[in-house]
Length: 144
Image (cartoon, rainbow, N blue to C red; front, side, top):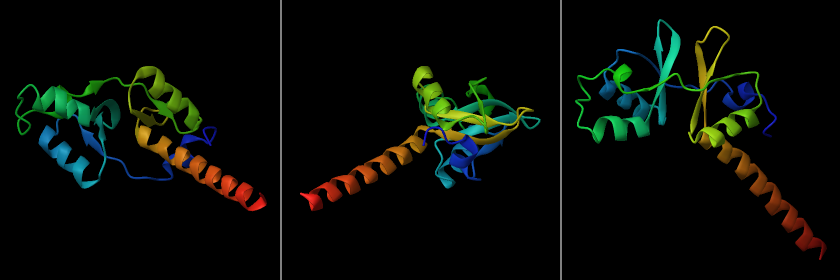
C-alpha cells in the first residue's frame, strides 16, 4: 500500500486552501466546517505555507493574537516540504516521520496545491492491515 501513488490516496478529496491575507478566524472556521486539521495557504495561486491546528494553538491562542485581525500569512508555517501526486505514498510517510510533522502539501509542477497528505491517511493503511490480520487469524482458527 505505501507504494501507491499519492493521487490514489487523495482520490480527488477536497482540502482547505486559502489566500495569504485571509483572517485566521475565517481559516479556522473553514477547517472546522470541512473537518480538516490544516489549510494550505497561497499567494497568487502558488503554495506559500500551511496553517495547522498546532499553529492555531501555539501561534495564535497561546500568544493572544487577535484571530479576527491577524492574516493567516502572519502565523503560518512558511515553505513546508511538499510532494507531487506521482510520488509514492510511502515517501510522504517517510517525510512526515523524518520531519516530525503530520501534513505534507501536494503540489503540481507549477507549485499550485492539489491536496494534502496527512498522518490520518496512514491510519487507513493500518486499518487495512489489521483487518487482513484478523481474517488470517480467523482462517487459522477454523483450520485448527
